[in-house]
Amino acid sequence: MHLPLFIISCISFIQLFITDSECSEKSFRDKYYVMKRVKRQTSNIRRNDTVTTTNILRDQFKVALTTGDDKRTRSESKQKIFSQDDVLSSRFQAPEFACNRNHSKAAEIYCYGDILHVVMMLGLYRDSKTFVDKPLKKNPDEVIVDFQRRFSNTITEEDREEVEQFVEDNFGVEGEELDGCELSDWKEKPERLLTIKNSALRQFALQINYLWKNLCRTVKKKVKEQPQRYSLIYVPNEFIVPGGRFREYYYWDAYWIIKGLLASDKLIILLELFFWKTKRSITIEKNGQNYTVFRYRADSNVPRPESYREDYVTARDVLPSKKRTLWRNIASTAESGWDFSSRWFADQKTMETCETSNIAPVDLNAFMCWNMAILAHIHGHLGNITRRNELNEERNVFIDVFTNVFYDKTEKAWFDVNIQTGKRNYEAYPSIAIPLFAECYRPLDTRMMTDVLDTLQRSGILNFPFGVPVSLIKETNQQWDFPNGWANLNHMIIEGLRKSNYYRMQQKAFDIAQKWINLNYQAYLKDGKMWEKYDVTKQYEKKTQGGEYEIQDGFGWTNGVALDLLVTYGKLLSFQDEVNSTGCI
Image 1 (cartoon, rainbow, N blue to C red):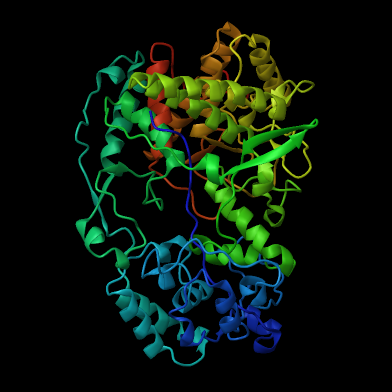
Image 2 (image 1 turned 180 degrees about the vertical axis):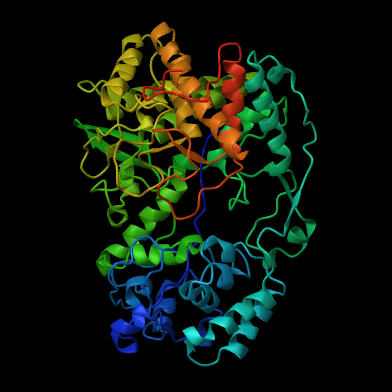
């Protein structure tokens, strides 16, 4: 079993200075950009030398950013002007970059520098990730020299076509460094899928199984031979991608992909352990006692290259002293995999109040509790009894920590805790049920299990016709909020309830599974695709709400969850094309 640990590495980049004198209000409406390039003396700077970087770059970039009717960014209602000190200055906090030339010679292209600035601020691509996924046709130094040669003077919007030509001449097509592949032990008709009783759902499962062939990738050998030309890290083995714009594999997705591969009789899996205990733990005080818990806290405190312009705009109206903290919290949210959501916002409404690194998430800590049990089992299997016993004892101690910090005896469930204030977040999120999935409780705490189900039912989050939404909070325009439902969260709720010894909880698990499978199959019948998320409140429509990008198909964890549920409940599940407003079929 693969550990469901999720680190999405968010690379950093250099941001720009905006000045009123360069551009009028009318020019904003006309989408006029004025850019002054950083002097080339910065080209060999190491990104960890933040003071040197700040001194050289200060007051050398001047950028005017349009708002107009551009729908590609989150919130561009009123343009304001910012100094580059907001991004580069060490006055309040030194910039920390997650990528530098020690990692790759291409860092000055993919992580920071003139080229990234110009391409992103001109808005050449609807999806910012497109550019940083493109491989280089030449070595990085050659590309930088070519950029300097072509653009030795001020760059304006009128240079857009020339910049596009520069990109075409120096960059390949995103994803071209990947090959499709044949899964070595893929089976057309896995035995476990043939046990599904309903013939329509059995055929549905076989069609999902075929989708694995479309999502299998290997990295071409040229990436290993010339790593400086790519933003993708070479790995030798085949892997499954989520699909769409997600051309890489993600640990957040991997658990559910592997669940589906196991249902498809594919047995080769890897196990990895990350650095959470040393890099992502923090000690907090509660009721006079100190407890060590886990949180998300990205290393970088600058905007993400893959969402360069979006992060820049988000921080536009934030005080200069707060921008680095906001950018770190945005990157930390991406690290969580449970991306932008009211759950991480101080006001539960706006991205500008994102405070992810100040939150001890109940689900992350439940996962760590589960990992201790998994590792103890592995060591026992390998004959290392001493280490197995140590890990079991560590888990026993952590269960007490977990209960004391996250469990609320009045609300009768586990909740996120704000590290600074010590307060719990009592809003209804599927994370409430994840300790059941991870089995992070005492076996004799049977009443605690049923109480959690009662809490979920009282909240109303289980009352929708096609599954469980991420939250009940509306109008945030974030994809990890109402009315969207995600396969992984629905699966963890289902599994947490199913693994109990109570019929009522097991029946509720089946009810949710039936709703989710009906939604997935209904969507597949209409457009032949499996999507990353769905609106769980009504009959299937492709359109869902929120996010920085268009809804993606594929889709790794959606496929994995569907196959696992179809196998688990194969003798019980049925399908009807019409479902009433209560979810009954």
